[in-house]
Length: 543
Image (cartoon, rainbow, N blue to C red; front, side):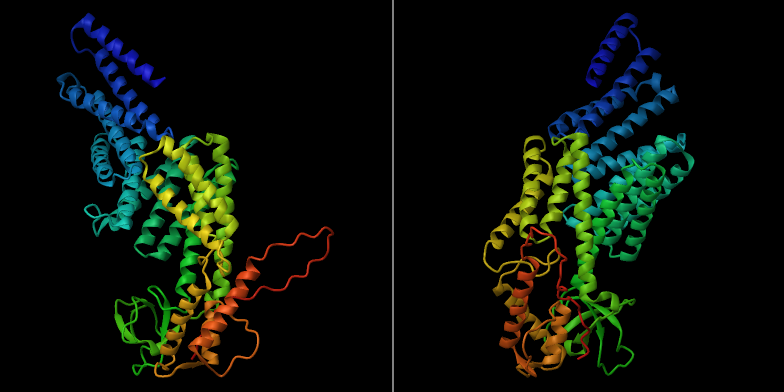
């Protein structure tokens, strides 16, 4: 329809010029209409969900910019500010469209250049005549540009990333939040719903940037603000998709946070592990909390003290685990599972909605297939991993045909291949995850390597580097924190490395068999008697 409009306008222009032989107000209006229609067609092709339309989309944007460059030099338009203002508005829309197009193609530098031009031109137009439409376009430009800057910082692309990218992204997002918040208060009707969605998306994007900057509390605050918007939208209109969109984004982030918290409170000392200081001559440091900065060297390890700029090097014997009631492994692991299951259910719902709305041949549906596949793959369970591969394959089939140049296709293939490797591992006897939704499936020989590392750290933390054994209490506390706490038989007072590894790995095998044991279907209903699952409590290590 829009392409026909462009052809019709061009014919009218040729006819008018042939009849009048000069540039008239009617010609100017037709030129502006042609430029605006090219921009609209570029937007339609770009957002069609078919990557094969991207080249045509780019062509229409460039045609609009070419026409604008020609027209803005004409004295006729320069002397008519209102026409020139409309021409500049189309110019902004063209640069913004190209920025979005290059973002989708992961051409971040090209996208950034186009968005910078869109931003600067919009600022000029606002100085001439401010309006809600221009403010909205400025907010959108700032949000998209900030996402590109933060993504570039996360990927650390040589020649593209700069140290201040995430900080610059945060500044743009904060400005966009102010713009959309002001617009939300000043408009009503359908536009208010659209503005509310843009505000929510900007807050979610800002939460991601704050995570990159390791400002976790501020990130949580942004998520909560977005959640409040989704809840208000649901109360006002129970058909609104804002609540589902926000819920998925928040749930995905909470699942990632829960996994990170559980990682940070395991007994193996790695970058990010939470610890407290113990037994130092300097009493002022004892009890202070901190975070591990790197790997141990000569029985010493670097620590970033909590709430301070100071970094110190400490002997491992002066380190104890950071234990709080809300940070034991059972609590943290249950949180991971609950969040992961909620995320999967929400992603299933989103995919079903998109299949009903857009069908299977749309980029949004392909993205939803990928997102659900990724969540299923991270379950680290055999059946769910097989389901994940099917979702990945569905997304790959679509993108191979319609989006062959999209970076998401490469990412999806890479994760699909990793999932296939996991399925291959599941076929090896005894290779399962002892902690689904958190840790990957492991074979016994891999568990033995982990237990060997844990044994060494427990020896170092208790000052027994010169000994070949650790005490039974040290073993139990260390393994409790790791998530193992039920042992059959007697535990000897002193445990050497071989005994430690054997007992721990035997318990891991039992956990795997219990967790992945197939359900038995009974033909007659009975009152089920369930044995409580082994607690994964991370008891404090006070050795």
